Length: 323
Image 1 (cartoon, rainbow, N blue to C red):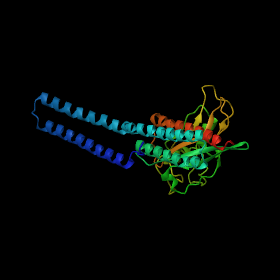
Image 2: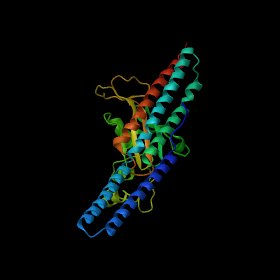
Image 3: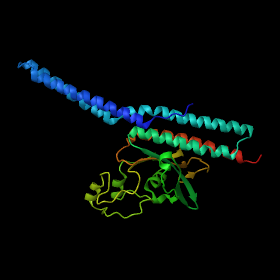
Image 4: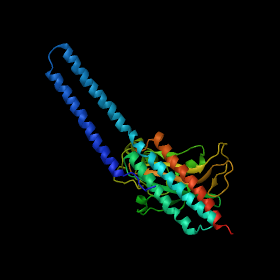
């Protein structure tokens, strides 16, 4: 299958041109209706007809504007992207299993999968950029257990955010509200916030990258209201590169009620939630995600990645097993 993805800039350009054409049609219809009213005769039937025509046009304008604001048509473009990611995973696993049967799998074959996963992250970032109309970033956070503590570490980013110098050090999961919340509440399927600065301002968000003390009192309602704007007031810039985020665990959970112990990586699953990590989508703009639709798309990608990682673990084990 050819490696093609949707052009985000081209999609948004055609969308903008369509909005201009629609807006021009709306304005023209109202102008025509207005002149019809002015030039009509003085009889009551003409007045009623003119008012009806104007009211009908205004109602259609409002209806179409609401439909455009929902931007549901953008989701139709993503179906092909989900199908394409499935193709990548299927083809890569098929090739690796064929090499396992012939006994020629080498470490280079497994190392090559990192570039394939990065390509998948590019597709996911591109998909959500089309959906939201903003530039979205994607990364995979891996869970690691050291002693009695659980750490989270960024293991891979999409190409766009990977060019920027972003610290990828392992941090304790308790230092990040989003990952800590999902791990402590296995029944929850996602963490979602459309305005991280506001959530932080009311004391409901922690992040290991937020090391600075901002000159704003978290206890005042006025400060919380100010933080609803895209930038923090008083000349202080928001330090994180994102203001909206959607996080879905890359995990398996059986139908049985979850146990008290969390399984991570290659540990046995049993009936407990089994985690590889988290798929994270974020945007520098606030209020970009529609959780009812966007969660299911993010979860579909996360489920594909879980299957891919599970099989890669089995293939790596078989490749390194002594003959």
